[in-house]
Amino acid sequence: MILEKYSIGVGDRFARQGEAQLQALVLAAGRGIDVVPVWNKSNREHVIIGTQPATVRAEADAAVKATAWKRSYYVDADHISLQTVDIFMEASDFFTLDVADYTGKPAAAGDIVKFVSKFKSYAGTLAIPGLVKPLDISLEHIRAAATKYLFAVQEAGRIYRHIESKKGKGKFITEVSMDETDLPQAPAELLFILAAIADEGIPAQTIAPKFTGRFNKGVDYVGDVARFEKEFTEDLAIIAYAVKEFGLPANLKLSIHSGSDKFSIYGPIKRVLKTTGAGLHLKTAGTTWLEELIGLAESGKDGLALAKEVYRTAFGRYDELRVPYAPVIDIDPKILPTPDEVDTWSGIQFAGALKHDQSNKAYNRHFRQLLHISFKVASEMGDRYLAALTANRDVIAKNVIENLIERHILKVFG
Image (cartoon, rainbow, N blue to C red; front, top):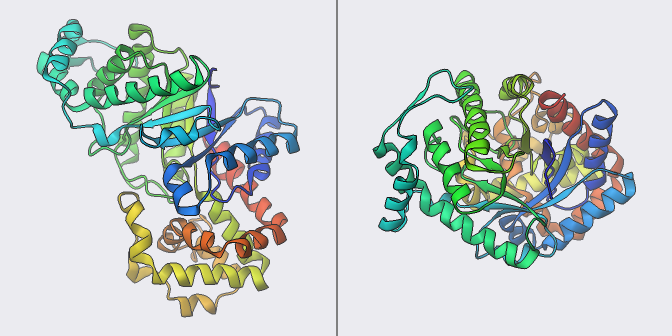
């Protein structure tokens, strides 16, 4: 199973927008842009909503049938560990091995010694095509990289082999995720992470490193765009070198997590992809549920009332809802509108505050972030929320399609 050059994560909290999501990719294909979908939903999201991985598979299969999609599509066991992977085995064919929590925990001393000995030939000045300057690598650099990352890669190996024992060799796609670490990986660190991945026998097809800046949920990138572009370019160079040097899969590519709505870096990403010919996996995840709220607001009457109710409840439960997402949100409660104020809004005002259009003076990124993490509130409404999605299917679908193709696919892959 080989992942295509360009892929996009299309997470869907309530499994109701699969057809609209896929329609966006059909439209993109009609413009000559070939991107394949990866439906992703993490164990955390399943627990919060009370769903199972089988619901994601069912949604994806139904969308493919409804749209007569002829290309590949995948279902991602998103951010899984050895403790959570088993429930995803039957439904998933893409596994994101999240080992960020294991970084900084040293492997056995003997394993570190062996790693340094095996890769000591890379010490010295190492010129890599695509890097402006050669890497200056010492044995201590190799040892430091092994001390920080080897145990995490070994854990990824344990998870991979467990999946392989259940699914079979070559029957699934593997991603290694290290994006939720303390600091971005330097080029030399990424090189030795990839060496360790190869040494573990993990046929990784995508890797998600950490980049400089803030990748908050559902809002634009915050940071030095020029520095990001430099890191992105360097990472691609390291990957291309490591593929040849260590025998990793030829289609190994970068994966950008929390990649939704990072508009300020989409231009640099697109430019670098065109220059290098590299592939990319862009994970967009939970913004689809925000398009549902936007559609409900625009529909007016009962839909708008329901969207306002979600916000009122979320506002009152802010401290609870923020906990699982604290590292990837920046919400200033003082800038949030009060529920009483929101109750006076029209559907246009509510949608304007929520829709990610930074040219609209009504847009409020704090309002958007709070609602992004508040899908638990909607899930507690049960059939009442799902019925509203059905009743307003067309206006919601229009927003879902527009969001994916206009704000994401065309800006990154077009």
